[in-house]
Length: 447
Image (cartoon, rainbow, N blue to C red; front, top):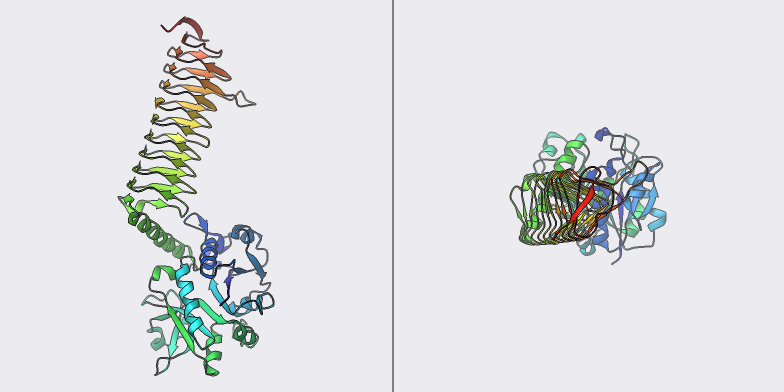
């Protein structure tokens, strides 16, 4: 049975008190709407349709490729929003799945169960419901003496007795397509001048149709986001979901409440994450690593058995058995080879450090290529910028760079060469040469 998904994303989100469209507020490092798009795509096996308001160019950009958009020029309620897709979807499918973009934690499994129940339902629609004593503003499901669904009452219009009901309409629906398109145009106008999808329930019941329900067991899935407080609650729930996944996969997280892992991060088993560790973007971590505490890693690759303590990595790569920090900064293009040590208060940018390099502390390496086994003394700086252009520094294998050496690029230090403490090297140093002074001069060869 073919099902098309429609995501309702035209709301203004005024309670967010923001100039940013509600569905673009980030959740787990992604725009909120991206979560709903991904789940609906997994549930139906095809790209969803998204109903957007006017001037929604940013929403279209954030939704990504393959998404089909329908514009709701006037915001006249959820029923009116779905009406805008009638011309595009009529005769295209057997069922229509409708979800709200502000339910970003709703899983594909829950959407799929909603679809499957409707496939077996002889009636025209199935509702997604949850049972909770905390209503979050959701409407209540009304049932008759025989337990059949007969309607939905919005919280603002419910009587005290109805407010005690704990079966909630959370905002997910699956309809028989033909029935839906025939009845959308018959929705009554509310006192607020809007058309609501919830009125379709009463229409189905009045015709003798069966309204089925699919129950969401995990209440975190139905955290609807209308305020920044709700957004924080969803962020906390998402963090717990992601962290549980990785702990079940063999990753140790000492304090899950202070550990942040993005949805695209990959982690190897036996890796240990210490408190206040942040892993974002398409970061890949190998096996048996120790990260943190107080470590931030973005869009980086870390090999096996690495240690990164109280440091920041952005667009960097570590081969296996590398240790970094504390208080180190690896910027875009930093590449540390097997077994390299980078100590405290060092910075590397757009540079390759070969296997076994020792960079103990207080050094800046930018736009450089460092050979295997080089020792970089404390306070070493590659002076790579002349005010107009960046220049490269090359240090060949086995060289020893003395403390406080200034390497004025472009410059090359040869294999097994040495520089004295405080040297300002503005000319190439030959293989096994010893350079000292300001400016540095070669005084002898290493035996």
